[in-house]
Image (cartoon, rainbow, N blue to C red; front, side, top):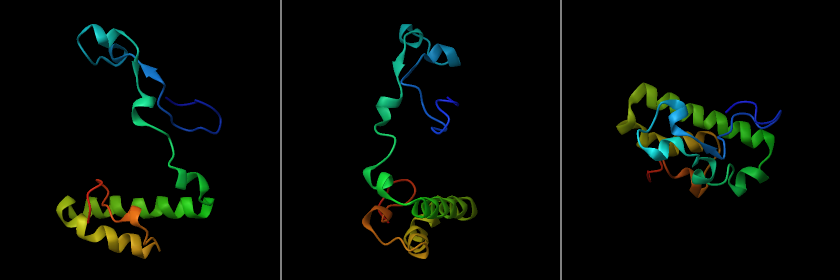
Length: 104
């Protein structure tokens, strides 16, 4: 999945065969299956319009959330997601969900 292009980074292929990864045990495993298209667009519209500075701030925010999960466990994390978002200056609606997409 590496090397899709010099600036593309890590990307899923359009199709993959499960048998190539020793997955699946029926006839479908030997046939190319859709991969990237099943996950939708690579970026949300708001990601394409944000600055590089905002993008890195988003990365730092997610890193803080992952660090919080590792330190406290999932049950305690939901209560902390909004606080982490506010710490990074993010108060918009898309940050009202925890890392698992559940409302906080």
